[in-house]
Length: 370
Image (cartoon, rainbow, N blue to C red; front, side):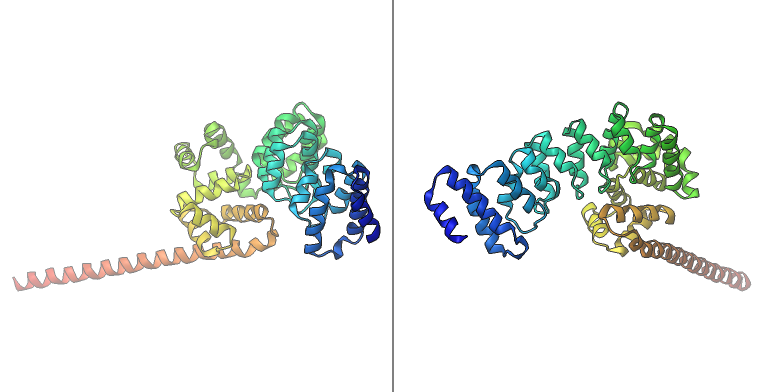
C-alpha cells in the first residue's frame, strides 16, 4: 500500500491526487481508533493539501468515518464542515470536536441546509438553539421542536410557539416535549387536539406542588401586570414586581416556570447583596453555604428553593437526585437562623428585664433614703 501511495504522490496529476486522497483516507480510517494524535495531525495536514482534488464520494466517506472521532484536528473538521451540506452533515450533526462557539460561528456563516444538521445535535446549548430558532427556516424549526435530547430555552420555546400556530408539524413535535414549562403549555392549549390538551394539562398540574398550584392565579395576574417589564434586567424588574405586590418567591417561581434560570441567579444576587459573579460561581461550582446564605437573605421559602435547586440540576445537566441534599440542608439552615434569632430576642428581653429591675431597685432605694 505504501508503494502505491508513493507512486500516486510522485505522479502529481489531478486524478492521481484524487486517488491518493481516497487511498490515504481508507488507510487511516479503517482503524481510526488505533491512530495516535501525531499520526492524525500528519494525516490532517496531508488531507487538507489534497482536499480540493478529492471526489465527492471520498469526501462523504471521510466525513462519515470522522463524525464521531474526538481526536481529529479541528482544522480538518472545519474544512469538512464548510463543504457542501450533504458532505458536511455527518460531522455537523455529531462531531465532538466542535465547541458551542464553533457552532454559533457556523450558524452565522453556513447555509440553512448545513444548519439542519446542526439542529439534530444532542448537545446544543441554549445559546445555539436560540440562534438556530432565530435564523433557521421551517425545516430547522421542525427539527428543533422534535429534538428531545436538548432543553430549549424560554426564547426558543416562545419562537416555536409562534410558528406552531401555522405549522402542524412544529405544533405536534412541540406538544410532545418533556421540557415544556407551564406557561408554554398554556399557550399551546388552544392550538392542539383533545389528546394533546390532556397531556399539556397534566404537565401544568404535575409541574408544581399543590401549594405552588394555589399560587398560579396570582402568578398569572403578575405575569399579565408586568407584561413587557419581564424582559427588563433584574434591577428594573424587581422594583416593578414590588409595585405589583409580588414577593421574591412569586417572582422566582414565575421566572423558573419560564426556564429563565440565569435571570433568577441575577435576581438572587441582587436581593441577596452579593456580587453577581461571585454568586454565579457559587451556584455553578456547588458552593452550598454561599447559595443558602444568599437564598435566605432573599427570603426564599424552602419550596421555592427546591424549585431553584431542581432548575439548577436541569441547567447543569446533573442528576436531579443530587439536589436533594441541598434542599434538606436549606431547610435546616432556615431553622438554625430562626433559632438564632429567637435566642437573640430572648437575650435582649432578659437583658432589658435585668436593666429594668436594676432601675426599679435604684428608684426604690432613693425613695427609702428620702
